[in-house]
Image (cartoon, one colour):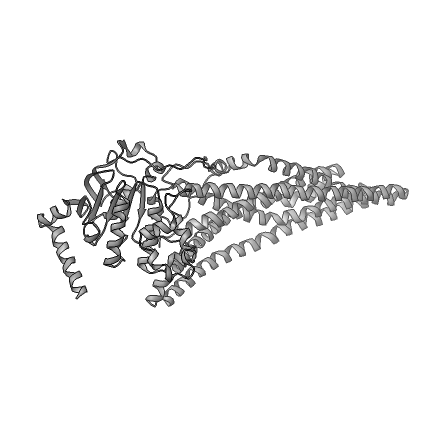
Length: 595
C-alpha cells in the first residue's frame, strides 16, 4: 500500500486562484448573504442604544410613552434581524453547498480523464479522503466559517462605532485586551496547520488501509492473517487518535484564552465606566449600553477559536486538493454536460505499430522494438512467458498509457493526433480479472455498451458462454453480485467481463488472457463464437494457453519485451522454436489430464 504523501503548504494567492472561479460562479447568493449580514448586524446595535435611552429616561423621570416606544423598537428590530439572519444563513450555506458540488464534480471529472499511470501511484483511500473529507472542510469554511467571520467583522466595526459615540474612553478600555489577539493568533495558526496536516494524512492512510483490507478480505481470511491486519489497523487508528487528540487539546486552550481576554475587557470597562458614572462624566444608561455592546462581542470572540481551527483545516484541505490537481498527468477543464449526439460505431481500417518501446520507470524497458500491422477483419495472437510484456502491449494499444511518438498509427493518423477519448472508442478491452461492480449481472454487462448497443445482454452472454450458467443464478441476469463479483467463479467473472466487452461497438476487441479460467470445451465454444462475430472486426488475444491463439491470422511470441518469433500457428510450429516447444508441452499436459 502506497503511503499518502503530505501536500506542500500553499500561499494565499495559490489558494485564492484555486477557489476564485467557484466563488465567482456563486457570487450572487454570497453577495446577498453578506448584505443581509451587514443589515442584520447593524440592526442588532439598536437594542443596547434603546436600553440606554430607557435607563436615562427612568433616571430623569421621563414619561412612560417614550419607554414604550423604545421597547417597541427593540421588538421590531429583533424580529427583522431574526428574519435577515435566516436568509443570510440560507444564501451563504446554499452557496457553500453549491460550491462543494461544483468542486466535487470537477475533481471527479478530472480523475476520469487521467491515464492509468496516474492511478498506478495513487491509493484509493487517499483519493476518497480528498474527494469527501477535504471537500467537506472547504464547504464548512465557505459556509459557516465565512458567515461567522463576516458577522464578527461587522459586529466589531459597528460595536466600536457605537461605543465610540457613547464615549471614546470606554472604547479604549473595552477593546484594549483584545489587541493581543492577532499576535497570539499568528502563533496558534501556524501550529494548527501542522496538526491538521497530520490528521488528514493519517486519515487518508487509514482509509486506504481499510479499503484495501475489505477488498481483499477473502485473501486475508484464506491465509489466516486476520490478527496481523487487526494489529496494523489498531496502529493506524492510534496514530489518528493521537493527532486528533493533539488538535483537541490545542483547541481547548484557545477558547478559554479568548474568553478570558473578553471578560477582562468587560470588567475593565465596568470598573472604569463606574468611576465615570460616579464622577458624572457619563450616565448610567451610557455605561449599561457600553457593557451590553461588549457582552455581545463575547460569543463571536469565543467563536474565533473555532473559526481559526476550521480555517486551518480548510487550508490543509485546499493544499491537498491543489497538490492532487498538480499531480494530474492529463489536462483538466471545468466539467460541463456532454453534448447530446447519436452514438455511431467508430470506423476502423488499419492499426500500425512501429518500433514501439515502453518503460514504466523510464529506466527498465518493458517493450522494445515491437512492430506489426493489423487490418480490418484480421486477428492477432500474443503469447510468451510471464512478464514478457503482453499486458503492457495491450494497455498501450487501448490508450491506457501514452506511447512514444510515431510508434502507433490508427487509420493513417498518428497517436498524438487523436484524442484519448476518440482513440479508446476504437478498442474494447477485457482483462484477465476484470472489475465487477456490486450491482446486477445485467448492469455489469451493460457497462460496456453505449445508449443503443448493437446486441442485447442475452445475445452477448450467449456468445461469451455465460448463458449456460444462467440456471445457477437465482434471479438470472438480475442477480446481485457481491464485492468485485466475489459470489461468481473465476470463469464466470471472466465471461461477464467478456460479455461486457462484446457489447461495446468498438471495432477492435482486446482479450488479455480472458479465457484462462475456462475449461477447454467452453474455451473452444467461445473462440468459435468470436471468430464468427469478428469477421468484419479485429480480434487481439493475449494468452498463456496457446490453443486460444492457434487460429489467429498472425501470432507474436514475445520474450523480455521483444518479438522473437512471429507467423501463423503452422509457420511457428515448422520453425520449431520456443513457440513450438511450449505448444508441445501444453498438448502433452492436456493429454495427461484427459487420461
